[in-house]
Image 1: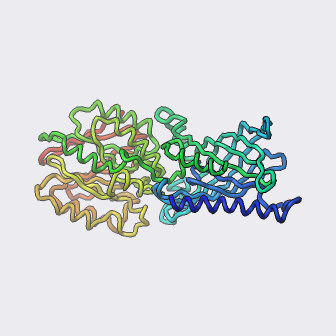
Image 2: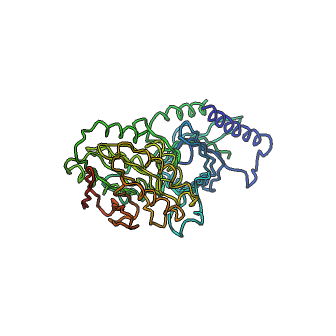
Length: 201
Length: 265
């Protein structure tokens, strides 16, 4: 719990420092390599909390994020660190009153890597080739979701702030489901994640 | 303000159980899913003992949940069964979620069940989850005229480092049999399989053969029914098939004898 609080605080600190740097330095034109937004996500098989920078396409429909996730032992039975690359496509934007808007539909995919000596990317040589066909460290997954946002004023600057949800699953669960449609229901392999996105544009 | 509200929301939502998942390899278990070996041995200890003990040996439920459900329906039709032994490979990917699914199915049995760890159950965080959910990887218990010894034989998962199976533990268990009960050693990988440590094969099979109370020994792993006295030493090796192959064995034991019956469902 303590570790998580510290983790959260440092993430938030990072967000605010980042926005401060923006305010003083790069007011008009941002360098191409600076991230377009930061995300903080809860659950979704990439950590208890995960966060990190991301980029968005010019038409704002395609986001790609690099997230660093942590699962404390208290919530996971084992402390696990995960990095994730994810891409989300949200084709439609519906404007609402008072600067609110929704992107009702998102679809995306991710690739996560969990650190630990018990996880393998390439199986050790004492296994015959193809003995186990999957890597335990890398998990591909996919999700559907949506988000709602509005522009907020932070440090005298307009920042788009979005809340999103995702319903996702990953390869090993999909295979289990496809082969066991009598015992497994879709809800057995799908889990929910929630997140916040703070934009810099 | 909004940010802290979100953090608060996130913390509140963690109280839900299955809705949120944090990592495929998380080891989150409810108390009812912990220490199942000890709990089930306690249940077995309360069962009435008769001259003949009948139990079921099944195994390799890995990613065959639908078939495993059918196994339970078939097993529940059998007469005079005391308990069920799962010969390992409970899970396919070593994921806690898989162990929970199989346990959900196996708790619909009319009988208590106990397990031995399979090679797939060792993968990733699997053995840690197995320890929390079931208990020790090597253990034993007695019922009636029989003594069951469950031993981790998944040598390949430990890089054939000489530690698995634990021969000295096995020998100590075999030596500790004051009542001269029938001894039934249960493992996942049989000693003649390529996944069993070649350097320990002789020590293992000799340990069984040198004990006159060991008449037969039980395994899974090869997804086929198979039996024989492979070492010409008086010990019969019996392998049960997988759930995918829709088969299991009903074993009857009595003082000085036993019988194995194959069942397909």
